[in-house]
Length: 313
Image (tube, rainbow, N blue to C red):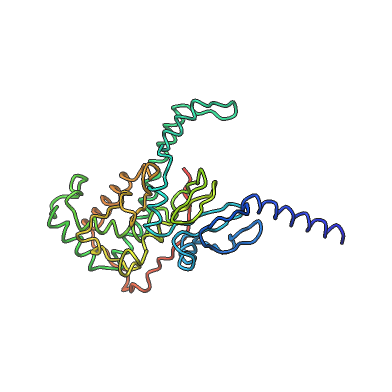
């Protein structure tokens, strides 16, 4: 009994020590967020689709939310305005991924070495990843077009008018297909290739929107929630490409209402390849074929259950 008590006391002391180390008691105003447990933090609040769970929590705590994932203090960003503050206004270090790797060549260690060949291989892997995320976006896009035949019909009419029926779509045709661009924007708004963008880290203590962001905090941008921000658009959960009529918003990271590929120097380097692939493949599929649900299946019976997955290259 005494041994069990000693073990529990030791673990409790260790947890408190780590907690004090992660959260030094200072009169600082952290962003609001759930109160977690020792060691695990708020991991118990996350399920199989963490981007959805973060979205639900942000509706309670706000677009800049503080949460502890294990022992890691994390800031979840869930609105266009907040994303701009973190990715543009307070982005102090402007070096991109390749710059960082080139710097590593000057700090060689015996256990870790990097050369130009390794850098080229890593960049190739990053660019190749655009194919996998593009396939995911195309799958979601086709499911929405099949579910909304009137939208598919409008897209087919544009393709027939601009391309004709006696030739296939070529990459050079994409620039003048305005309705296709709106469809692809809406696909990326609802189904960003990475619902949670790759984490950033606060390199020093800073104040963002009146909140203290501790050094070493992990910053996660919830692109899935930003695309569904009710303050930025009407009926955000509805698939409606025509919401982009007359809009200058694009997916290239300049407009924080729509950042499926991230923004700035740390945005996805395969963005242009991925965007072109999605536009090109969707145009070819819709131009060459008529798509319907099989055997009289209704749209409500169409199983589009979302699952979380990772791709390793």
